[in-house]
Image (cartoon, rainbow, N blue to C red):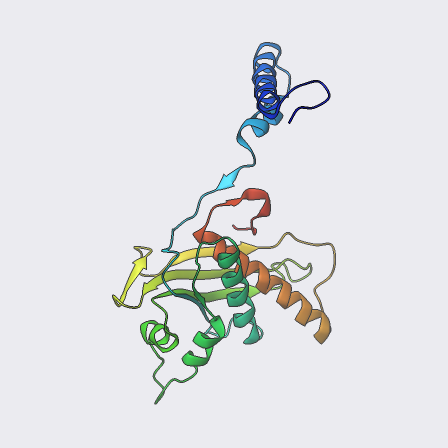
Length: 225
């Protein structure tokens, strides 16, 4: 297909690349500030690599654990897990996701005061792999005045069939710290405001958890510390 000037698509692409190259050369010689736009044209948006890559075909479940009761509501575990699993599906990092609600339900079946192991939880829902996240801290305000939520988690990947941790090497897990930019608004006070705020933060945490396992554009990433 040609445009009004008679250029086909290949010629147009070549012209864009040539233009970008000229911009870089001119910037180098003149010191002007057009290098960044030229770089963007050639290379596209900045990508953040996955921290750990998963086997996309193995049945996988996200299980968020909060035995220390750091989260204000237990339902937030489901919000975090569902957001993470949907992001992993959307990005095709995993094609066979098992609903996080099944893992939460299985974990509640502790017997005689003994918590089920992560491997047993995985087996109970038919998962080969468990993305296991423990909540270490959570707050809606880091300064007690502004709405500036933050949370810290430790993340592990457990191979259920092999009964072992496959990532990370550290026994304690991979530390994930999430923070939302401070807002000028005050900390939510009413029950309805708190619920909405907690759901929003839960979704942000879930997205950040999922983004450990696939490449994404920095501008679309959840905030980390």
